Amino acid sequence: MTEPERSAPIFHLSFPVRDLEEGLSYYTATLGGVPGRREQDWADVALFGAQLTLQHAPDDVLEPMPRSRHFGVTLGWREWEALVGRLSDFAEPPRVDHRGTDREQAKAMVRDPSGNLIELKAYRQPEAVLGCLAAGQRP
Image 1 (cartoon, rainbow, N blue to C red):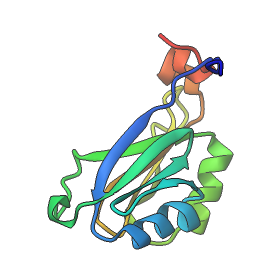
Image 2: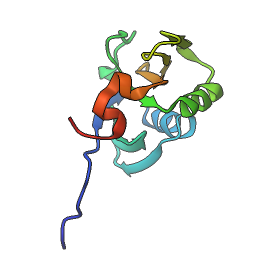
Image 3: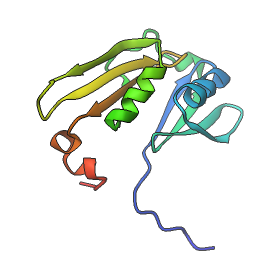
């Protein structure tokens, strides 16, 4: 068996959830992720090009979750508008900062059922803020 070629790495993040079923439902039904591997105490979800591993570890869930402990995704502007348009329970409501500049950005933050914070962003001119990452290039 030959090893498949990969052109880009996939970011992986593992974090605790209070209830695995509830977490899976949120990341798949609410945010649009695709379920992956599953074991008794953890499950993978492919979401926004990343591999999330939800760990059933209720004692490791922080309450309240400090804002400095969040993860997120940068989406295209229309994709961001569509996603936040169908969400309703925001930890930080949608807003647009730096209007009219090359740094114009849209932001919102949601909280999963375990309190994990997920920031949703979009930039009008991604290349002005993200440089080579906006073009899918590795630094």
